[in-house]
Length: 296
Image (cartoon, rainbow, N blue to C red):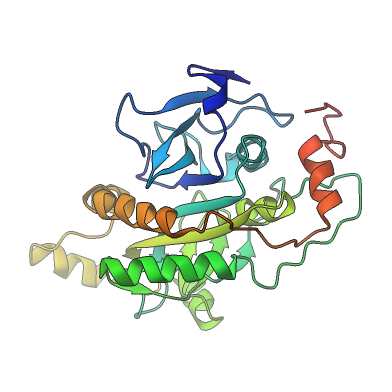
């Protein structure tokens, strides 16, 4: 581990993982930057450790600071292992999502409670050489979700206290038929990165709460080409990647405020659930089961 700040400043009990549009969390010059050498390679970005709501928080951005890491290329194992090595036991993750359901309209925050994993080929466990089954019926920590719901109620922003996110492989977006199928299967939002991030955190004994921001209606709710042409004629902008990023930029201040409110409300005595045996998490942290054979 190398750091630009003092070594005793590299411990943090809370981690924040920033999604699309969230590349900085702290004011310039107020955080220590840490590069963690992990057995799984480099993290998506250097980790910044600073104070938020009176608590030490470690922040990394999922796609890199220049949004240069595609969703299917994110090194989730390195990211989560690095955060845990710094002492993180609770992660607040932010995500940009598409809305699959009319009740999850653009501009809505969602405290996600379920996910459906439609990804493939991603390194999704720390237990490559040992049989270890993760209890994953409720992927997101209920105690942290209650904290987040209370924080959003106090902020008075539009939000949904529950939501099922369908996690797709990316980097392409859905066809209209896929979008309709996922909505009919029970999905409320769609995203490309929640898995394997959330189960990997759980394997390390880290509790996770997700704050999603709906940027757009997914293909199944989006206008057809004819409807989009009529909208353009009427002066309405069609949904594009550029428009999504513009909406995220406009919402950045309230997203950071929401994260800060959640961080402030996490109890100092918070203890994550044990979804795999504690000794298994300890072996993953020590990297005794890693395919690289390296030792942390």
